[in-house]
Length: 179
Image (cartoon, rainbow, N blue to C red; front, side, top):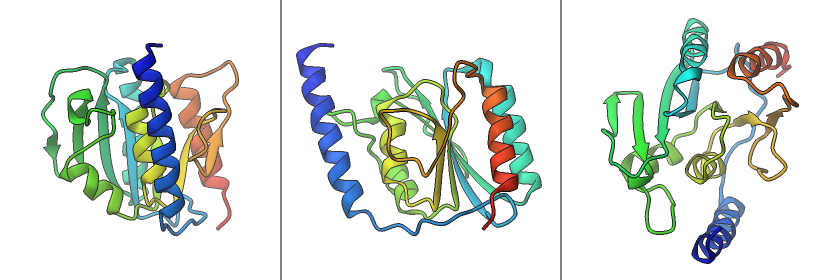
């Protein structure tokens, strides 16, 4: 890693930890029966996972959960940021010099109190980690990681990390979670 990237990484890590410490959010145990809203973070370049993710979104909608989707594209080009009322697209072009997400939509998503936040990315990106860390979601869910401490529920997939298996585990835990 280049020295400048290491410096930005340390600065960002410190900055996020400070903001998380000041963050006021209502943590709660939420399952598919009690949830009304969900924010879904999606790696826009992982096309092989889209079929599984869109089936999961359909499942959530069938459970009367209002979905907001945030697609992140790890590219330098600008992407059209809003495609529908509840679907937003961003790239590295939508970050400041330190790599932090910026813009009105990001501010809106960070202020909104979602019941659930699902990080549906297998790869970990600072952009999505930042959103996860500073979201006011009542229950934040993602893949297990030693490095990320912002999830309330982590799914440990061991060596069998695939979107299909991850979604199976999500469904199992959230259908059986007692509130």
